[in-house]
Image (cartoon, rainbow, N blue to C red; front, side, top):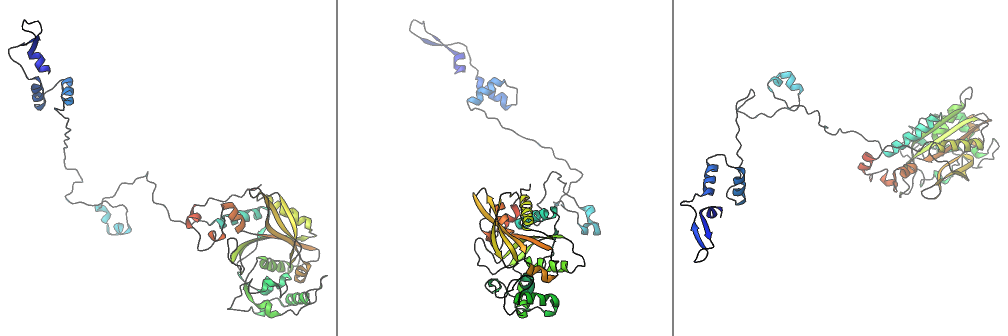
Length: 393
């Protein structure tokens, strides 16, 4: 249209009406001329180029040119760079002819395969630290297989007690019995007499005590069996010295499996042996212990245990559940247990215990104990669970 306007015009005042007339003698095709200039790589005004783009008469084309020359590492064969320098390369000298990848010091590297601490171990570590902070020493608890004497008889628990039946206790079939020579003779006789006829202010249970029951091997049902052995060793010392001891380890009971019970669990136990201890000392010690766990609202309810008198169940107020929850058991070891060992008469022993699984489940929000221990444990839970920090005061 611009070419036509340049070559022709219109005379609107002509006597015969509007008439088209030629302005010039000859016309030049401007578009063609510009296209030829572009084709010949001549410089063209940018405005003309943009007009041609709009009319889609031209389109930009990018052409890249590379210049390639041989370098120092030029080879006619493809060789993959080595990632690692091996012992074999150093021995045979092949490393001199190898090419190696550059080190990327910004790379994060491959994840390192490592073990992970189970939540029970983390909570156990916190409880252990609390006991050590309070000046307690740890008892050896590596004896999973125990005999009936130390697990029951030494604790003044009668041989006809329901806890000693097969529906509550796991009995070992091989070896079935402990050699009687491994039991301290004098102490065994004093325990037998206390059970049968009493003594030390007690009337006993008035039954025929059988050494065959005491010799039966079992999986220990509580860590109090460890406490009994330690107290007996304490009694054999020439001069009594006050002690504070604790244990945290596995125990076994023939329980019906459900969301809150397993055939094995961990028991936490603490004891203090000193002269003239009273129930007040026990309650004060419990307040000090549980305060370090962040539990300050405590209640105590009278209870019964064969080897402690008085005995108390321990309750703490749970703000989330808005109710009092049982958290442990406690008491003072009976004279019928301590005096046959040879413990001085003016020495009393206060003790308490609780499970490790219950506070762990509360701490990590686990509702089913089988998700904490056993074949149903989610390994991702073990790997991803956070560190444990009890709310110590």
